[in-house]
Image 1: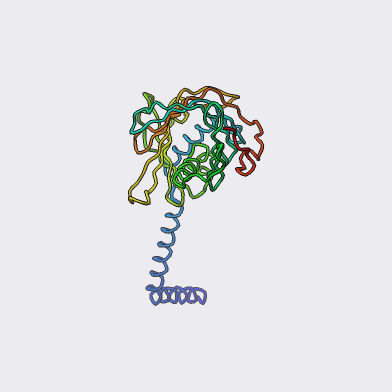
Image 2: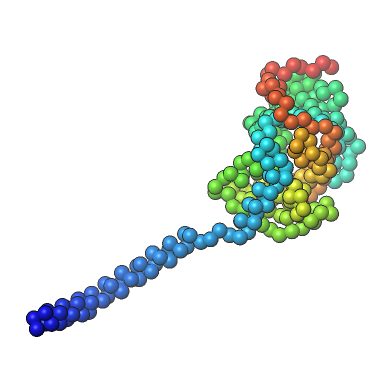
Length: 279
């Protein structure tokens, strides 16, 4: 009997406890529900467009040569360069040799005599001719450094490894009569590069980026189209590269020969040590 009375008293106390603390318990339940909702927001599944875009970018790297392509430390490209003005050819065609050391050193030698030499370090550009050495105009230097920072190689080696970067799959379109997947990658600074990748081979057909014009406060656009791919030393290499500025063709390169990993000496990219060409 005492046990029954004790149980009855405990039940009565429990009911009284819940009645007295019901408002507090309701507030606690609401707080737990909000916390759970916040937790669900932070664990939202990845965007399918981001996943597809990253898969396409990885397929691009594989098509170009995979890890071996990522590890290329230098290259020498030879060919001819045609200039255009307002989309029309100027008639000026120049032989060129492009020497590149990854990630940010370039040497451009022009004319058959290779007597005009432009060297671009990570921060500056210097032209060397029989007249001596002189710094290139900052507009030219900025253009070269900007294109280097937004190149296909930079996307694969830098942008794709940035954990803050976001990737968007933008559907398909036709580039040079070929069907292409359009992928855009955006970094933490809201800078972006758009790549059009062949839907069959996954090779880059076009690279595009935009930047704000400091003078006119609008946007300029630079794009390159890649064609006539050939396998060179195991790497897919475009032998025709066409560059556009704001939709107008400005330059076309026809490549005749490429060599990779030739172990280029560092002094080739030091303006102060490059000999002055003879007149």
